[in-house]
Image 1 (cartoon, rainbow, N blue to C red):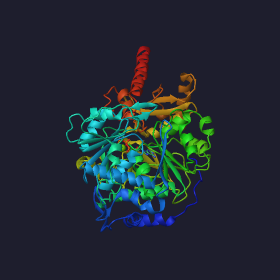
Image 2: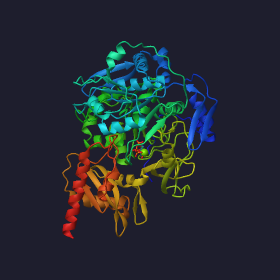
Image 3: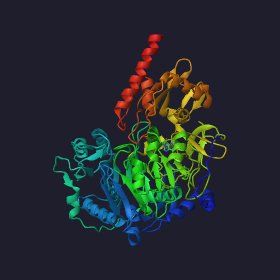
Image 4: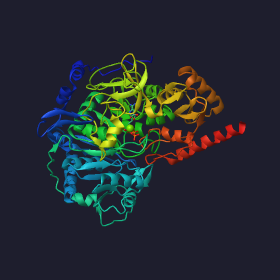
Length: 638
Ligand code: ATP
Ligand code: MG
């Protein structure tokens, strides 16, 4: 059905999968032993659906596993190679991180922060962010990171929900060369919140800030703090953090993660997926404000004592070569990014990446959305020079870590562009119909997870009922991720988009990813988003929004015809959109995901709902204008 790429790293450990398939509980029990525990667990899994407790009775500390365990052999090894947007750079070794984290743990303690208290971190991508996270983890405080692009209202809602005692922020953060006044935003966000006792300010940009009686400067607090702070011995199920989802489908949900299970999941998947070696230089472009940053910028690489790059700013600042420049500068070996970023790089053309030496790369990855096969092939050829396997990793904020992905560090299997291949060992993930019955191969349906896994969320913060309803009510004792999918005859999983976004035309169901990938495979197209709107005759019709590649000067009338033809040939006449709208940008969340529900709302003349996680309001206006203009011209021609 699709092309396969036989490229791997030569690892083949069939036993791990066999063990996992025969008994996933003993399998994870064994994996958990890769971490350092203060005391062993008495029960590997306590499963009262839908609540799972992993490694019950065991005590552990995330910061201990990320730092203390490396002090004998790796104290001089760089943990973080930090690259500022403005060209600043810093290198922090495992020894330096260790000292800084303990100083900040002691600082938090001196401000009265105790085990179980929440601490909000509203910081740019600077080393103080992972330091603050690990410092919370060390003393058992629950961190809640808020992406530093959010407005005062978004912060206010989240701080109110978590009732954080302390907020850590910066005077400002750099974004596209401009200073974002973070401290000012916090001041506005927490007005009247008496429960917020202290605001700690890192001076990153040195812009002028007003100081209130709650405010303390990071540098001054740390100057006098001791760099010895023994880690709390925490229960495995002790909450490590609250993180709100991207909000692609609605209001963000406060996902609560635990410690022992979560760390076990990350340790294992990082090893299997990235085949991590001591000599690697790992670069994950995700902002720590999202789960990818929590799991695969902060916790997983540090658990492994890896060296990683952390970049502060926009991926195309000061120009479209920035990522390739960073990869070349640090001789990065592993690159993990998003389809949305790749589509942007692709839009700028091949000459830019081709002018850099990317020969140090050995493994590539993506996460966040289905990757269009066309984009996968570009990534493989232009960035990986046809020698790097690509791992398309499917997971969610709620799953904590990867659940579906090729695992080159464990086994070599042929890759298919656009497929996440198979579940990680120990997972029973299938595709079912509306009634929960497994569907035949190559039949579309809903992705479901049939057993618990260690990285699984504990619950939604303060809302067990919502947790049960959102994830566990559609199918009995199955976790429902809300994604549409297909399993092919080789058992490979294909993620076809959000279940809520599925297009239903004349009795047929089409995933958004299938149609968008077809449109994006046209040479002139950079990005596309499709959605369904009601139609009196057909029930629902499809509309498509298309962004062209840079410098393309095609007549859109001709292009429209070509796209219609392409869709008819590749997907089928049934999938032909009623209308194509050409726009210069699409509404996306700040984590880069297309917000189809906004397009749908515009198409349906409905209210657009919660847009607190939207990247750029201008995109919505543009889509609305394009839509209105075409509606007007249709009405005029009637
Ligand atoms: P909300 O739940 O508030 O709507 P969100 O689902 O966008 O927000 P995340 O947890 O960041 O928040 O995103 C997880 C979703 O991203 C998955 O459910 C899936 O739809 C999509 N996704 C992630 N990785 C992949 C991938 N490799 N292939 C296809 N889809 C992916
Ligand atoms: Mg989600």
